[in-house]
Image (tube, rainbow, N blue to C red; front, top):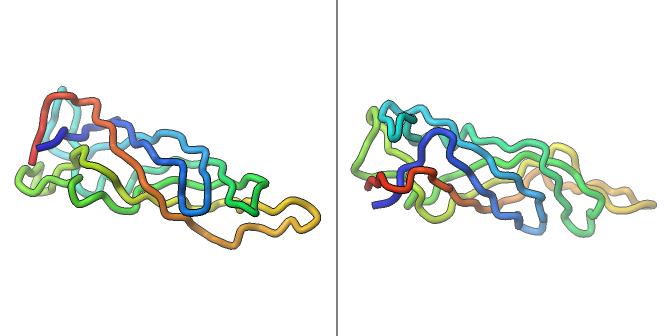
Length: 140
């Protein structure tokens, strides 16, 4: 049993994405479940794919002139979806432990002059946590 994630709950990304260090900002998750907790919809499988935190700066040595990118949830952890409780035939999202995140580069970081070489990697893998505002209602 773990806490159910509901509409507007916080999504925290950890700052280390492989060799990149991202100036992370919290995101919010939007729920589409049919069930409500405290008057807000519950988050169900698939809602995590809509989380985006744009315009986060990053560096990835030797690319120390900051670039920018977007944080997303790539895949929930195996303990972040209910196996028994459902909302409209979909598993509900629960707090669990850690999800797999992705940082997608939109403007590459660069090496300092005279090289000015841009970071060649289009994305970096990372992790994050869900922070439920609901402190009482749990599901499995």
